[in-house]
Length: 132
Image (tube, rainbow, N blue to C red; front, top):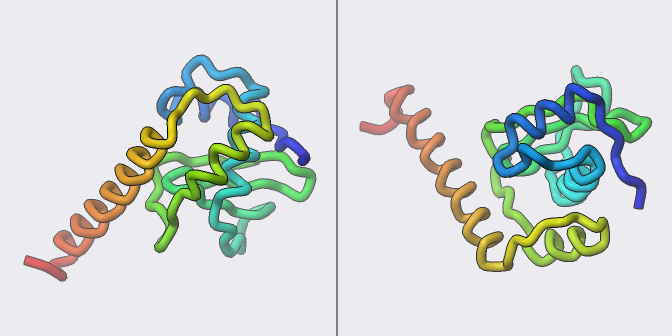
């Protein structure tokens, strides 16, 4: 399995904006983004120089050479996106990701993402006066 490459800007952004990764090495970030790409929704990439992936609230673009060129955290999760927790754990093992997260913690993380998504939807509908 080919590991994604990252730029210094992506490395810095990931460490500063993805919770719990303040001290994560460049190699581990590359492996985590590779895992995330394999679990993400692949979406229309019109206007981007590469393929856009949406992994929950983390969106990123991978160019044809396998390098992450753009990344943004805190985005709106794609519709019907659900984390495949079993595959996540398998990929952590296969890619050598040093992550001590348990199955229960992973389920909780997935639940929180879905709740945040629902809250954002309700706020949007309320703001547009679609609900009272």
